[in-house]
Image 1: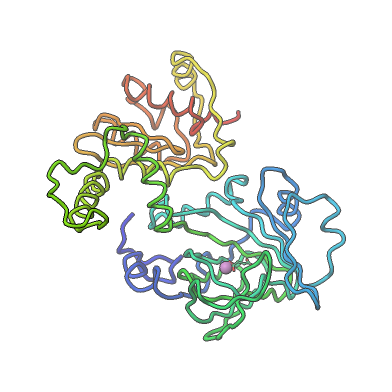
Image 2: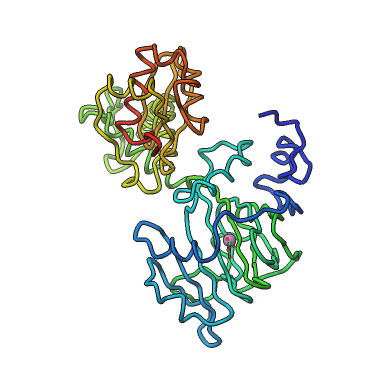
Length: 388
Ligand code: SIN
Ligand code: CO
C-alpha cells in the first residue's frame, strides 16, 4: 500500500501524514470517511449475536438513581423487550469474527499493522444512551454506522485520573470538554489512547469501534520471561566464579548486581526469542476454541484444491510473518514456524488473501514445502475450506 496516496478514510491526508501527526498523538474527525456507510448488520441482528454463548456482550443502562448499570451477556431473548425507550446501550465485542461483512471493513485499515488490530466492537444505543465519560488505553476509530451520535472529547487521562465509585465501569469523575461534534453515518473519529471521550446517542444509533491492541510493559515482561524460561535449564543460574573476599558477609555488593544484569542482558537481548515470542503473543486468537483444526491427509487436501475447493482464513485466526536471516517465520494463531525463504511470497499471500484456490496458489501447489505449509494451517485451524 502506497503511504503517500491521500485516503478518503483519513479525510484526504495520506497514511504517512496521519501516522506522523495524529496516530497515538491527537484526535482526528473525518467527515464521510466511508461515504454513506451502511451497516451490514442491523440492531436486531446485533441483539441476536448478544444471545450467543461465544459472543461477548454488555448492556449499559442509565437509571436516574443508579447511573450506568452494567449487565453482561449472553442475554435471554426477553432481555431486550423489557428495556426502557431511552438511555441504554448494547455493546457487542469482536463482531468481525462472526460477520464476514464486518471483517471486510478492516481492509480500510491496511495502512496499519494487522497484528495491532484488536476487534470491531459494535454498539447500538437508544436515544440518550451512552457508556459515560471514560478513557481507553488503546487507539480507536469510531465509525458512525446508523443515526447520530454526539461525541465530546476531553482531557488526556492516566491511571491516576479520578473515577466515579462504580464496581464494574470506569467512568471519569471529571470531564473537561474541549471539543464536540455530531457524527452521522460514514463519519469517523480517531482517538489516541487515554483521551477522555463521551458519546451520547441522539437517536437510534449504531457505532463501530475499530479497536487496537498494544501489550502493556508488564505483559511484555511477564509473558516474554515465561516464554524464555521454558528453554532454560536448571543449571543456568547466577554464578560468581570471579568472586572476591567480602568485607561484610551480610552486604549485597555492586558486583552481584553486575552479574545479575549480565545474566538478564544475555537472555533479554536474544532477538530471535523476542521475535518468536512477540509473533506468537500478538497472533494468539481472542477465542482459541474457535480455531479448531481438522485432521486430513495431504493427498486429499491437494486434490480438493486442484478440483476447485477454496481455502479461507478462519475469522478467529490471526496471522503475521517476519524475516530471520534467509528464512521466514510464520505466526499463525499463537504458533510459529520457521520456513525456507523461498516461501516468502506464499506467506504474504496466505496472510493477505481473502481466499486461496488453485488460481492464486498456482505453482505453490506443486511445491512440497508450500503444500505442506497449507496443509498444516488447515490442520491447525487457521485456514479452512469455504462452505460450498
Ligand atoms: C460506544 O460505542 O458507545 C462506546 C465506544 C467507546 O467509547 O469506546
Ligand atoms: Co471508549
